Amino acid sequence: MVKKKISKNIRGLKHQARRHSIKEGIFASAKDAFGDRFIAPFAIAINASNSLVAMLTSIGGLLGPLSQVFSSRLIEKHSRKKIILTAILFRLLMWLALIMLAVLFYKGIWTTALPLMLLIFFAFYTIFVGVCNPAWFSWIGDIVDAKFRGRWFSKRNLIMGFVGGIFAVIGSLFLDYFKKNNWLMFGFIILFTLAFIFRLMSWFTFKKQYEPKIKLKKGYYFSFWDFLKKAPKNNFGKFTIFRAFLSFTCTISGALLAVYLLRYLKFDYLIYMIIIVVGGIFSFFVIELWGKFADKYGNYKVLSLTTVIIPIVPILWVLHPSPIYLILVPSLVSGISWVGFNLAASNFIYDNVHKQKRGLAISYHSMLCGIGVFLGAGLSALLIKYLKSTFIEPIIMIFIISAIARMIIVFWWIPKLKEIQKTQKFKGSKSIKKLLAKEGKHTLLQELHQMTSMGKYLH
Image (cartoon, rainbow, N blue to C red; front, side):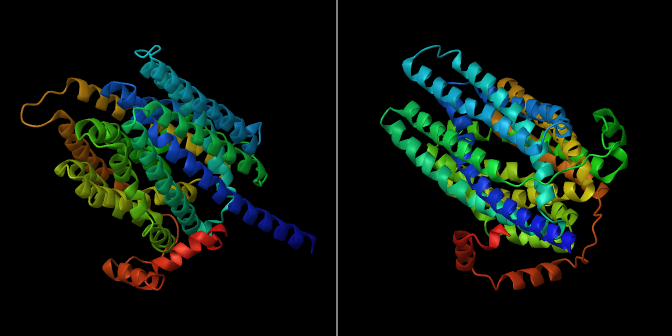
């Protein structure tokens, strides 16, 4: 009787924790919309070189995962909540630093040194983002049951994407207004201030969230070197190597997307941000479908389907410079494919790693992916600086190189992975039609009503 009462109480605490996680995700999305999404445009606005803009991605790709490897051991001595709360406080300082850089640029002080200072501040910011990740990944895995993990994460991501997309467009409108009135730096100051405020609200929400106790048994630890040696022989290791190579190939073009849209095509901030976020808006219509598809047919099947599409995305970006085309074609394809891939990738890790080893596993996974990002962005920075071509623009050539490299990686590695969960047999178009027919019962108006009421998404 006592055990049943304790079990019921824990279920209630986990339910409440999932509700807090949704709220925290909303605040984090608002922070991303007003802050993270505008770091590359801010770098361009303070006259950072194309190579330095690419290096922002490179530095982030390396230092974040390195800090994850360090922070994964913190779980042994400190609660996951304490780790996250402390790291967020340091991340808050970064927004104050960016506000200071905007003020200095407006005043004409140290203008030539400001891009390098931005790179340094962003490096520290990335380190503390990395410190959070293993603890958060382990924590969230303990409050979300495996049987509805795909659906719950799809709901959470849907809400976060909706909030982030709306705020990002509002932020770009705001920034364009200030730019037309020659107050661009004031626009960035206000946006980064809002990012600071929303991250602070996220911190307070984390403080209220229930954290299940985690008991780490002896022998749970394995070194990065042990992981590397065993990686080619197990499913999770192969998946990690695949993600690392895919990160490398994707970052070759991804590190220069802001440069391509803002400098090469000369779009204003509104058009730029609409193009960037519209993929997330498109994903609203499919993210829940991807989640239910993954729960029914397996995460590997989602990975297989989405990675057929991902390699063609860089080609789509450079086929036509029309904003309408960029909004409706590459953003649509990218949004639908990446939202499914990212959802399945996260769940694939949960499926393949014991909960006691998740903190370590995600840190090593992120480390290899980060090395891929670092090398990809570094190659991107070198190519944009030194690549010469008489028949095609160098930046377009870089996007083509990225597409070809993605194709090679996908077709080599995807067949080497396998699904370990028991799932229903996938019957191609018949299964898709059946799932779509079932989902057709839910109208868009019903989904929007559920989002506003929040009820369904907080279970």
